[in-house]
Image (cartoon, rainbow, N blue to C red; front, side, top):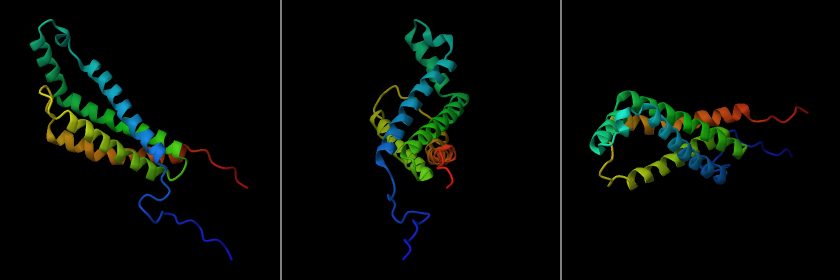
Amino acid sequence: MEPTPRPVEPQGLFDGLRFGPIAVGAVFDQFLTMVAIALLIGWFVTPEVGSEDSEAAEAALEAVLSSSTFLAASMVVGFACTTVAAWFGARMAGRDFVRHGGWIAVTSAALAAVFVLGAADQPSRIEIPLAYEVAGWLLMLPAGLLGGAFAGLTAPRAPAA
């Protein structure tokens, strides 16, 4: 009797997932995003931010962080970071690349939600327009899926028999 082939899609929601690479990918996404956004802020910062007058510096920084150009650039950077982290984690998993990339994005979104909720009571938090906030959250899953797809495309293939 011939063995039944593995289904193209796993039967359960978590079948075939390796949770270590998902966790590593999600943490890597958070780290990479924080570093990239810090570099982006440095790119956008004006000389007024470094002034001796703390009120002027804070106002200048708030103007930079709430500008539509910065918000759009930070969204692109966040999308790229999630894609790279999902690629990395899915390559670590070594199988079911797109599923792993998607779960890396979902786990990273959960971590980001914890950070956002933890900073919600901070008085100097810059208000991000709702449209940018929603778009950023909605783009995380496609970024993870894209990273997983790239991982599948770049994975080493077994030689043909």
